[in-house]
Amino acid sequence: MREQSPLALRTASFTLATSQWRAAQATNHLLALALVTVFSHAPQASASFPPPPHTLWELTHEAQLIVWAEVESVSERPRILEGLGYDASVTLEVRETWKGSVRTGARIETFILSGGPCVTNLHVGLTVVALLNKENGQWLPTWPFCGTRFPASDSDVEAYRRVITAAQQALDQWIQARLAGEAPDFEKAHWDWRVLAAAHPVTRWDGVSGLGSEEFDVARSFYNPRASPDDTARVQGYREELARDVAAYPSFDRTFALLLKLLRGFPSKDVDQVAANVLETVVTENPPPPWAVFAFDLLRERLGEHPTPRPSWSHTQKKSFSEVEAGNTESFVREWPDFKQRHGLKPKPIQPPAK
Image (cartoon, rainbow, N blue to C red; front, side):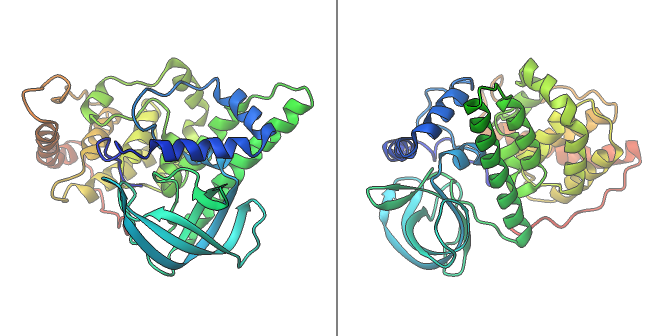
C-alpha cells in the first residue's frame, strides 16, 4: 500500500464517510452494541480531519458485504473529491462473497475512487476486494479512502481472504462468548490477527498500523519510539513469528522498517540478511525511499553499532521536510558501502513485486 499524504486527505468528504459508517452501525443492533463496547477501550482518534483510514480489522466489522469481484464496466464521473481523484461508477461481477449473502456471478453497482492516495488504474477485468454498505438502496464503500483493495496475484487474494475471515470469526466468537455471559479477551484476538495480517506484504500495513510505530519523520520515529509499554509487552510473544514472516516475505515500503522496529533486540540472522538484501535493492533508487534510512539505522543497531541521531525536521526547522529527508537518504547512500565492508556483508538484491 502506498504511503498516504496528510495533505491529500484533507477533503470535504468527511460527511460522506461518516454517513456510511453510521448506516453500517444502524443495520444490526447487536453488532453495533458489540463494536461500541469493543472500540470504547481503543485509543481515541485525534481531531484530525478527516479520520485516518481504517485497517481491515475495522473495515471487516463495519461492512455489511465483502466480495472479491471483477470490474465489468467503468464509468468515470466529474471530479467530486478535490485532491483525491474521480468518483468512478463501476459494475462488479462477484467471484466470491466473504461476508453477506450475495451469490457468485451477481452484479453490484458501486463506486471506487480512481485517484488519490491509493491510486490504481481502474479498468475492465481488474479484480477488487470491495467492502460495502448499503445506503438508500445503493452499495457504497464502507470507507472511501483506501477501503477498496486491489489484489495483484492469487497470493494477494488468499491473504485478503484469510485476514478478513479471521477478523469476522474473532468478532463472531466474541459476541457468542458475551451472550453466554463470558468475558473473552478481545484484545488478545486482535493481536493474534495483527500478526496474521503482518505475515503477508499486501496486508502488512493492516497488521502493524496502530502499534505506535508510524511517523512521517523517520528520524524522529527511530530515536523516539512511540510504542506504549503495553504494546511493547504484548509484542514479545509474537516476535519469533514476526521475524519468520519478514524474512520469508519482505516488503518494500515503510512496513518493512516498522517490523524491524518491532523486532528491536530480537536476534535473528535471517532478519539481518533479508534487511541487508532489501537495502541493497533500494539503495540504487534515485532517490532511495525515506523508510530505507530508518531500516538502515535499525540494521546497524542489530549488528552492534550505535547510530547517532540523524537530522530531524522537528528539530531542524530551518530546512524543509523534503530537504531533511533528502539529506538523510544521501547519507545512507554514502554510508552503505562502508557498512557492508565493516561487517563483511554480501547482500543480494531482491526483485520487488510489481507496483
